[in-house]
Length: 255
Image (cartoon, rainbow, N blue to C red; front, side, top):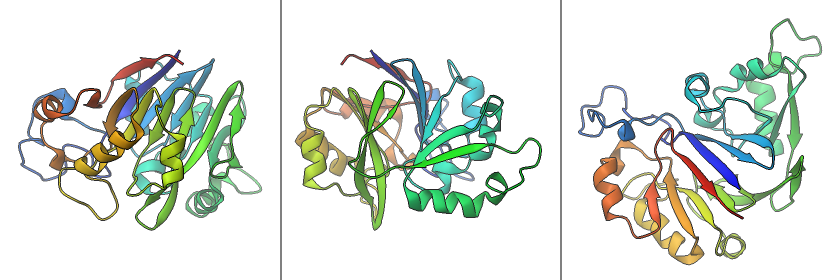
């Protein structure tokens, strides 16, 4: 049994968006309140955080269980790595493992040089960064993880296949070979920014077309902006087996 807890389901601006008076941003429905995109995957005794954005502290204070064993990073954009300094809470018993592409690791060294200095001052996050490569599986304990390459416009980034779960965010295009590897996955978590087309993110129609090609057992949409519309209305109009995620949603899936 794999469990995923969605601790953030919004795009880089979050929802509500600052200074916006649209119906979604003014909604009182908690399903329309979206922190920046992140999730905790619990599987085979491991607790894996996918992305660590600027809302990380707030997310972990309200998560159903805030124990973590490692971080998987999809890409270097701030809404996916802006909370890494707060991982200091997980470094009491040793360096906290972070798995990412080498280019992401290089950027983390530039953004957080004090975490990688030769002499670390007291209280600094102690991070063990491990480079991973697309299409090359690796293990955390008994959990095998397959990094999958997708394109965020012109930026190569990673999705992750973990047992019965595939987690894809910020995707604009996906190679046919990756579509083939995802065929029939029990649970597909995938981004859909809004209804209108966007340069670097899939629109709702583009995501639904991709889901139709992959044919997962169940599909859950993430990384949504306020332009997606009200959660309750959009959810009612989605095809069978497809739904919007919401902050705090917990889903379990069998092998």
